Length: 340
Image (cartoon, rainbow, N blue to C red; front, top):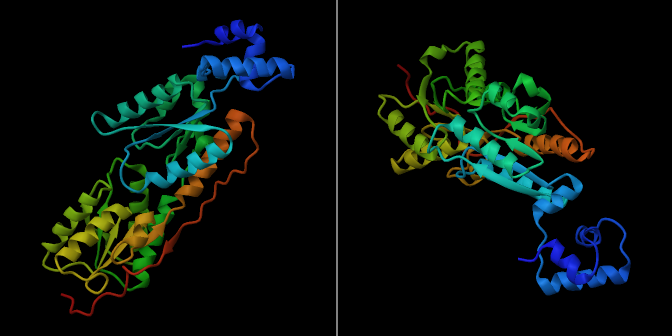
């Protein structure tokens, strides 16, 4: 494989001149530059990314970590990051976990992997890392943005929607339709944003006079399968609740699928409310009413902060994100029936 030294030797120029032609930075006489470019083509030389990065002090790479590569939640987030970076001549390197080992260890290993690949900054989405993991990054922690979490140590580098308010909006949506007999399909208790939305939901129900001790909560893990399994649990009850709040859309869609298979009509027999307003919500059957969390706006704000930090840009940064219910077809008034 040809090196920059080979290019310089064959072209009869110094390494510095060859480097300026390759990078496009610096002045080189047109005839000399053309001679160097011909040698590059002749030798089929491809400049080392690492070598280029040494010249300007940056790799032009942003590392991104997500917990797993499945479902519909992370795809729009990755797309926003990639589109913005490409528009600025930058690129994304993605690492993700698979639950093969401890999630916290996977996240820490991935952050180190990305930093070892000379990424100029990191965007991290993880429920598993702790404050001490951020501290362990040392000076590199100044180049990290965390989405959907908050750490006091790097609070200016954390971007998240208000999930307590998201839970409040979910409760109000069901109460608005006069639901009182409500079940909840929760996400993992280890997920801070899940805990926040459930606290907001239960708090609003209690404030409106409902006894939250009577709200059945079925544990889930944010997957379609968890929603499917939760539907089986609910269908075994003597009386189906009039409404089900699912802590994310994927569980809601699994729930809808099982209800449909068992001949239940949504929302005639039971209302279903999702959370996130992911792209799949619009195409569920029936179309899923969901609490809209502006994940793409949160992502863009965090990314802009990181680009400002890493490259001296002056991009706008927002820290206020509007949350509202996207009304579709899966929530209606409770069915008429005698209550015991």
